[in-house]
Image (cartoon, rainbow, N blue to C red; front, top):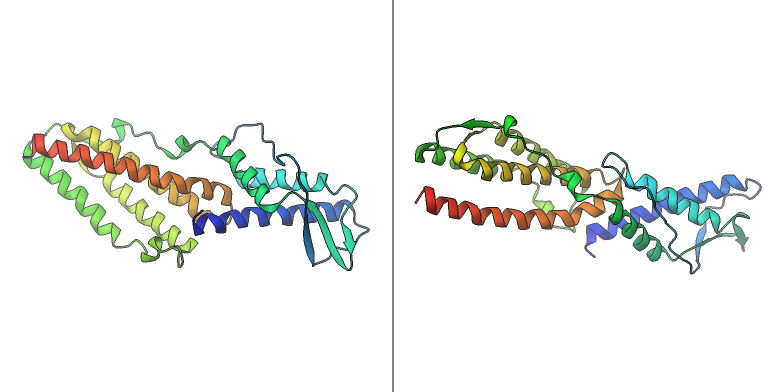
Length: 251
């Protein structure tokens, strides 16, 4: 598991356990809330049984932390046990909770929600597909991406120094790229390539947007990380298609 994923997973668990602690404390208000809390591991079934499907507008973390809270609360119906001044919470193994959460969340997260629908009506299509028009399009596209990429934080490629702020800045860079690519005049002959390019760029922007929302929804932030690899693979395929296009139309 990569370092960013470990950090996110830890945050997911922390949110759930903290919420459960306060729920149980309120349930049994006669017992003082101790600051020194020890998680007592118990072996049991999957603590999270999510039935309803999740729409892309819902916060997966909110739903899953609620499931954690309910699970832990169910194991502590009589409140916390206090032994030697330490509060004990009966709960499944922490790593089991995280694994179960992410497994269930993965079933309810639809990667397709990240992919935009690019309609031809939103594209500035030109009927001029001559070599000059095609060359101008590809040069403009290259300049947009090359220029914007200079603004991507170097730490984005270094897990040890990566921060949420860096991810947010990267999302803003992709905002600019998408906006500028949308403004391009597109020769009809290259329309399919342009549509795919815009789709992948927008999807990548959406991924970084979810990742930048780490503190509010770490579960979704965790799940979309794998989508970055898939998108990069699709970019590689598109690059091959562009090379074939050049060989055919711009030899």
